[in-house]
Length: 106
Image (cartoon, rainbow, N blue to C red; front, side, top):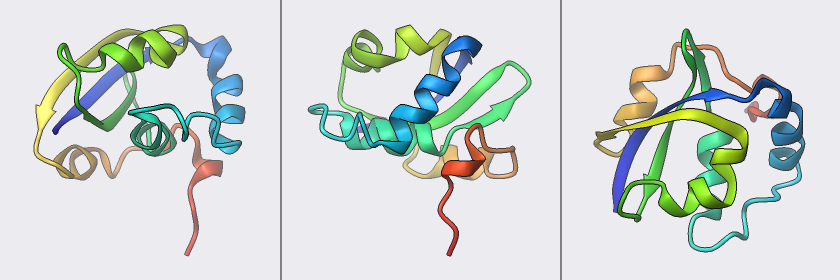
């Protein structure tokens, strides 16, 4: 298993649809990546060039299945950078959430 810091430019007209799908857990049951996809996109942050999140992935090339099933319809200019598990989240934790209303409060 590999982890990546994913950067992508959202297709801004699709963000409301993505938020609705995430709220409904629409991607959770997609195999083999549904849970990781949902966790990553729910935690996505905003940076100057677009969105950024950490993604757990098993594909070669990275995110191949995810791009075909979900990501390419919602984002463009997708890049990945290998990171240690959790390191990507630590690097972006101070950035604002892409979907703040989907964050759990404790």
